[in-house]
Image 1 (tube, rainbow, N blue to C red):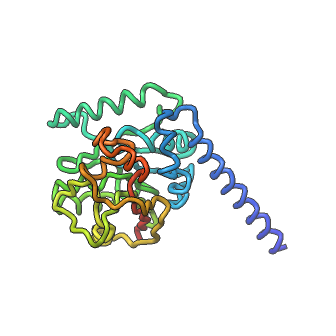
Image 2: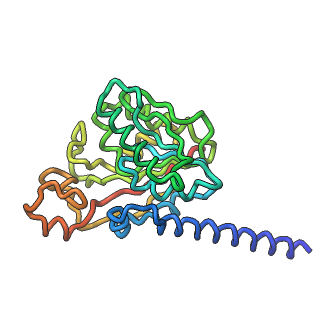
Image 3: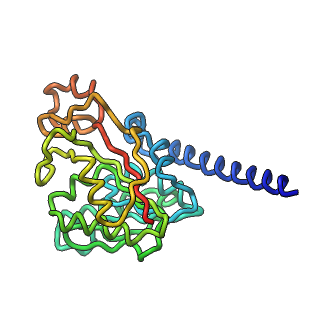
Length: 267
């Protein structure tokens, strides 16, 4: 009888995992996604990346600095029915005009498709000024994609606060998932990370200082063709191609940047 109960439980777990897996594939294939964003899937591996971070459709998930919403297009529909997505974006009442405009653009983007984005919750994430996106011990997963370099300019104290607030928001056992442009360890990281690349060891140190444990690394988003040594930094590479026609064929051949993919856990 015990073996029967174990088999039933095992089968139920398999069905649940399979359902979550199908839901993620469905979200990635969703009609709400911008065609230009879909073309980046081969370089950004959203399915493998989110699987690595352990996402489930019933989780409360925070996405910090969603930018134009590349990952939001996937996360919002995936979490809409059974989970919760909180986006940490700039303060609509910020003293910074660009921050206010950024909030307005993102909000408008979400309002264009309420069937996909109507349940997205807005929290404040403006590292140099105000961070307030979730109560302590309330979140299952915090994610950020290619953003660490943007925050480095604000200094060590702000960086430590960013990681500490992520730590505080998570439940015990919760995960902080980071994807970031990777600077080779042999190259000196500048004070403000102007090239857009940072050391993997630097990110790990910040996370461990906040109390996280490094659970796993992945090379899902690695690109050995990228030397991280380009005129105009990481933005020389696609999709930005900051140097325009200059050496464009070379940069297209390289592809998107070499990236670390790190999974941290709150004990």
